[in-house]
Length: 344
Image (cartoon, rainbow, N blue to C red; front, side):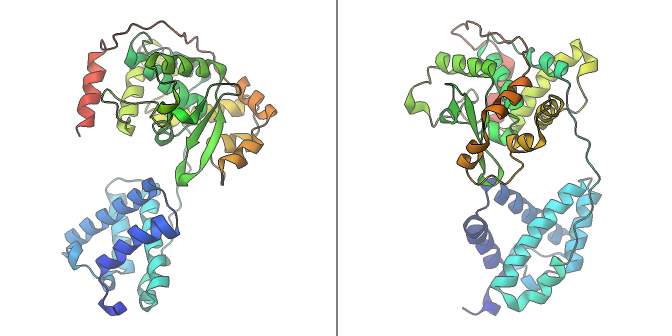
């Protein structure tokens, strides 16, 4: 087959099926983000130039068309960061085309020359130590959903995890014997090991014992699930956090920031570590901001002094390990919400 006969659809398919997962080793989340960029781009092309996706050819690409697409993104109220993310996906595709189909180098070369736009510095939103303590006390730990919610929010904060990382935690990722640790599967297939505080270890141990999931055959099961036993979603975690933020704000309005997201729990942990005197290099590794090749590489730096420094920053929010009633179906509103959420 000659290159001139290759359709744009074929090139896009190779980009997504072979190049991104194979040659680049991109994670599923990254590939999905790239996919969304192309879907939005094709919608834009259909509306602006009347081109159906199946009729689009690589010769239809142009610097002006891409710049118009990027401008539309900002016009729709999206951030500069979103605009740059979309451009990064398009540039990755153009780089692929440049090497695989060099006859189109003039077309993609003009697009590769488009610059990223400078982003305004983001203000890191975080909650005070006292505010975190108030938030983590809100859930009713005597119900199944309440205990799960308390443990969920505690582990997000205590581990500094991203939401995608915490909802993907499996029971086998948890080590409850000393030194207690948690394996987080980060962005770009980068795993890291983080220490768990003694209090969090007690909470998760009790949770697993009550759920009767301590046997080896449960190691591949998700730690946090909804009522159907399915993985929690980002929207579900956000709903849970917002629920308790509202309760905490009613009681202590001065301690709860506006528009506080699950990711802000991660920011809060980082700030509290910094304020506790933990060195920046440890915080970088703890949050997974460095290029961690393997979990073993991270484990070598997980020395005693690092653990002691992290333990100093732990907040004792007076979480109890209560005796739970066997019936955990009292929290009907949240259970109903999660059930409906899974049908979407």
